[in-house]
Length: 376
Image 1 (cartoon, rainbow, N blue to C red):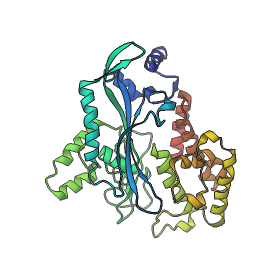
Image 2 (cartoon, rainbow, N blue to C red):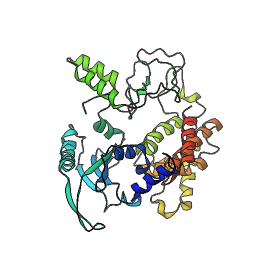
Image 3 (cartoon, helix red, strand yellow):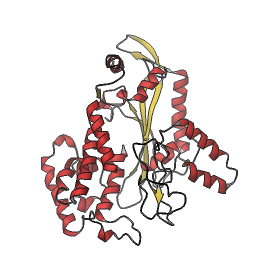
Image 4 (cartoon, rainbow, N blue to C red):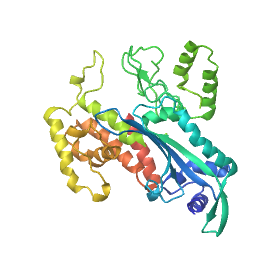
């Protein structure tokens, strides 16, 4: 039903949509339809792989993989009765060969895609043959490395979309940072490229052809030394995409505002004007977050706990979302310096838009402008 509505709107709007709600309003779904990859009776699914720590004070990692059925209404996608478990790896240590678990899961999906399976369609009153269409594969930062076979966000090719932008690293340190601007007086060999304009063609559109070319290059490595060199150059670690807002961004901003990110010998964190979340200011800030709990609707589930007490002991992704993008503009007002606060508000504005269930085309353009302003 939703597909026919979207097709009708595209025809009426001459190829454009007036509003965007979920995956079905994106170009990836439209392209799959045009290529005949998705038929009327097929089931569209998303795969999610996530790691979780069961106990905050001891090693207790486990891995959980699920399927979400997009054919259901969006407010049903993550309900317990609608989620399809794929596998659980109990831990406490991380799996040595994740592919051994992924292979069994996707071999079943592949078999169903080849042969289909029969089911009774109540609305049509007869049996139909359906095949699952895997629309998206998503994971947290740790799981994404297993899922897409790339080096992760701290590698030289750290973009999880494989856009081709290389990161910068500090001298004699292995971690790369996806900074678009070249640091002052920076001469680290191999990553001392000039500033990258986020609106220019220098940021390569992700391409499967480029990935295949680089994969061929990696697989042609006949020595371990050559393999490591090609792995660094291509960002691929083996032959072979929710957490950006709620985990990765807080992990960047909060240490920055605490002055806890490693700095060079000529760049003392104690002199950073934005490193303000210290001492009494941090304590009062945590109390302000706690005091705001009474004003949050009960439907918001778990409110953010006092970050000054709990942020390093089990702060959940949902808490980070409410803390940064819900309460953030209020509790950081007058705390962060004005330029940093305004920059943060650009991020909040854009994040609030892209997390809506219903996004107009005008709002989408506004969010894109705010994201660009944030990364300037």
